[in-house]
Length: 540
Image 1 (cartoon, one colour):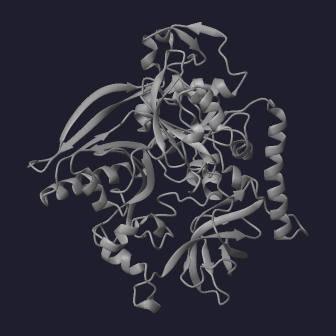
Image 2 (cartoon, rainbow, N blue to C red):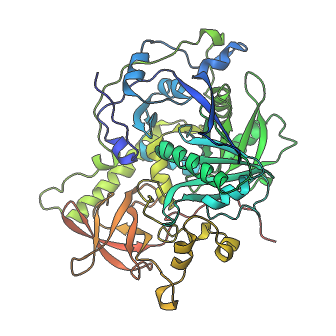
Image 3 (cartoon, helix red, strand yellow):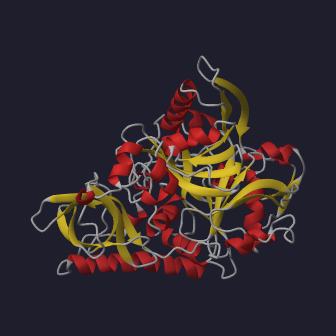
């Protein structure tokens, strides 16, 4: 049987030649416990449990929306070599189109929703994104803060409990970015960390190697648990607070208006099988207000359904069944698809300028979203959304996608992420690559290293600039390259981000981007392209 190619790029995923149906797959939960007395490889304690929505169904009868109609795709799963999230069956029965992404089969879009519609719906209402493919970790122990401050430039000694910070794992000596990550302090010696699915194997080896080195150098004990099969959903959009507030088990006890961007709390969420304790963090990857919710694997479907039902008056089951009766669902889906973004950009017609053709393409792209919106019920407040909308949303928000906008050769300073380097870390150093990174913060004109390139945003004329497109000056000499790009549903323009020669990175600088062999005018632009709407704590 033909194997599905695993990809890490949204653009590649959108152009994958085949969507393969998935069923359950068992994954092991690994706990790594290392301390300074460890002399051999880390001890791995593995327990196997099925990564499937129906594992909790044996507990009680509930209202069931997701019933299986077809079985027998286990062979496909094994042959494809991909994993699935706890919400796979839900996506399948909601008409999801699947693509291989980061080692998982993930929903890229849903039947009846254009990417534009899903994107705009998130900006105006609320969308739920399944991000369970991302790797969740727990770190604890007396040496945990010192260890994490060795491999990241974050100021963790001053990070308050249940507060989060964006950071990055760094390579020793070079300071290159191993992966970008969100770090949340749960207690004096407890941290919760989320890393990218596409970097999974690299990150696990990196962390194991760095832990071993830390302990060999005399560091105190660090316990590391990889939360293999836990669910993670992102509830994003201006209505997310209202909807999530309505499903809290004790809404009078917790007012989400008092939970600000970058803060988290353990909260009980009402479900048909009883209240479920989840870690709720305010933030996300869209630029909108929202929450990311870490959920026990047995409860992921129940919690997600509860939130969907709260925001969609039509989202209710017509049948009641025992959880035991839920069959595994899968159906072979073979199709060939191109990028929705690319499909809207057609060759210019005779007598029509490239700019006019591009303008028409954007109009068609946005019109598709309007037509789809008219078909939707006006009272819908929450919907599922896929990878494609998540990618265009994050790009409008100016956020990086590792493997494209960030990589092992790029430092935080080059990536315009200097702000993730804590003030105390700038003075004290002590993190991987500090000798290089701290010198890069100082311009060459002031005796520092400076940088040769910087990450910036672009507004491109005439056509969408894709990853790899070269940026040239008026003499045709290369001065940079594009790392991400797409039509912006919110702005009706072609947006992109990439790296450009230092000194040419200031907003308003005019450059040229080579797209399919044709020069296109572009303007360096500040990011985010669309203003962020985070719910931030008022300044004193």
